[in-house]
Amino acid sequence: MLGEVLQWEYPADAVLSRWMRLHPKLGMRDRSEVAEAVFDVLRHLRRYRQFAESGFGPAARRLAILGLASVFDRSVLDAGLGEPEQQWLDHVKKIDINSLSRAVRDSLPDWLDERIAVLDDADALVRALNSSAPLDLRVNPLKTEREPMLALLRSGPALRYDPQPTPYSPWGIRLQGRPPVNRWPMFEKGELEVQDEGSQILVALMAPRRGEMIIDYCAGAGGKTLLLGALMRSTGRLYAFDVSAARLARAKPRFARSGLSNIVPVVIAADNDQRVKRLRGKAHRVLVDAPCSGLGTLRRNPDLKWRQHPESLQSLCETQAQILRQASRCVAPGGRLVYATCSILPEENEQQVEAFLAENPDFTLLDASKIVQDRCENLTLEGPYLSMRPDRHGTDGFFAAVLQRDKPL
Ligand SMILES: C[S@@+](CC[C@H](N)C(=O)[O-])C[C@H]1O[C@@H](n2cnc3c(N)ncnc32)[C@H](O)[C@@H]1O
Image (tube, rainbow, N blue to C red; front, side):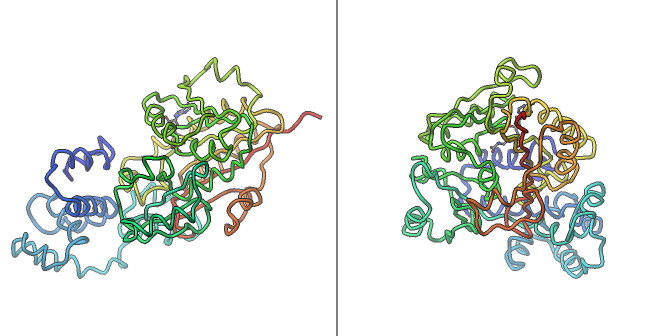
């Protein structure tokens, strides 16, 4: 299975899920240990590949041994290893990883290491991106509130996952571990969703209001649409656009569970879509949660650092600029456009916004910190952007900018 993951043809979580389906007899604990070992290899692949140059036998086995060594005690692991493998592992464990370059030590491809090197506190950021993430949930404010949901979770089987309120989002609950949330009754009733705190904060930044007309231009499976709709108290009109019918189809059962009746899902064309044209200058708020490298989510998707490359990044940047241009046309005078990514790279973030503002002088950048503090009072931001990082905020890496269209004089 690791060999298949390392071919990069499919996302690692898709290969893992398929493998789990093919091994129905494995228990919960075995499943989570296998997944943990595979993710550990993906996080540390470059370093492990260097270590695997010594030793013998198939390289994939040596990588797997290193991954398994992060999950099991040596006494357990040694039972499945030959004597020479045990000696090799002893040798590898003695290597001082601080003597390695950051790209090898923290396992980054060179192109990404160069880009991350220019960011503030690059070492801390990379370390946090290479760790595993907790599981963030969000209550549906249309159906319930956080305090009663926390009490409910703590009184049931979720207690052992130590449910805690998230520090910034008023709707978030953080769990340690990977419980089967989608089988819980509160999930089935649409009271609870899985959503990283960073995504919740992004919706707070949209500051949606009752009765507005809002477009979620890249709605995908509807994660942000759901919270937007609930904060609009199911009033007004909330368009959920996406070019992918398959992704929007995945959103539909979530919309149904949520109890929202203000969402209008629409599959749009990437270019010249007539329905988009009809909404020209009409929307109070437009969210562009753009397709991006996803490099802010490496805690959950460590394979992305190996699946992305400079060419894919270049192509994503072109798509982002094009979507931003098209979506901006829907914004009404005085309305707002929020551009967001789950990337940490300036070329997908600040540089996109600067290029857009240079081409569109009728838009002005607003200060995100003031807007977000209405709902997330503990969150202080530096500068005009929303910039969340796992090392500073405990969320995935997120970026957002709020742009307001001028009203004609
Ligand atoms: C980051 S994902 C959105 C995630 C979603 N907002 C959520 O919270 O679950 C980006 C989405 O942009 C969509 N997309 C790609 N090109 C697009 C385009 N030209 N117009 C609209 N959506 C597009 C992709 O299909 C993908 O679902």
